[in-house]
Every structure is written in C-alpha cells, then in structure tokens.
Image (cartoon, rainbow, N blue to C red; front, side, top):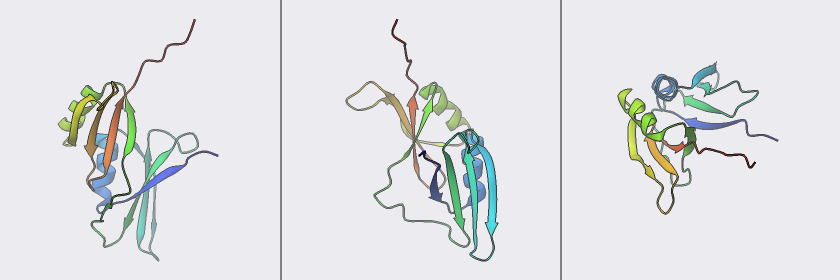
Length: 133
C-alpha cells in the first residue's frame, strides 16, 4: 500500500492552483471537469502521481467557502531552509501564520503558511542525515 493523495475542497480553484504552483512550487499534474455533478478536480504535486503523494483540489461549482472544522490539522512540507522558504513565500504574496523558528519544546525548525482557503501548511526544515561509519 501507499498513500496516493489528500483532498481539499476549495472555494476558488484558479486562486488555489496559483497558490500551490506559483507560491509553493508544485506542478499542475492534471485537471478534469464533471458537468453532470458540477465539480472540477485539479491534482497538484512535486512529482508524478505514480511515484509521489499529491494534493487533490476539489471545486464544487457555486461553493466559495467551507467551514474547516476542528478535525483537520495541516499538510506538512519539507523544505531545505525554512527561513528562505518563508521569505520566498512572503515575496509571492503568501501568508505566513507562524514565523520560522524551533518547535515548542524541541529543536526542529518549522513555520506555518495559509493557503487561499485558510488551510494550514507546515514547513519543516530538512534535517541532515549522516550515515554511520
């Protein structure tokens, strides 16, 4: 088994695709419309679906917002440098909701950004992995 995708309902598909591709650097992998049931799907990610977990953005025609509830937490992305990533995201108009720094009670460097629908995305500083000699 492997994880295929995570689905988010979005209120403005074009705005969400722009955020995930232009601000977070993902690629639009595929998009399809269902006119009978009035929805559009867009799949975005950092690599082909055959090898990577991706994000499905679902736009239900005529619905421009959702109650995010309290069960969903966030999507996590590994970044080479959390400080540089936040600077680049901010420069492209992204919203930093938690400035970069160590996680409470730990040393891992994290930050949070918000997408156009207010979903939380955690940026986690990539850690150096050293092989034992």
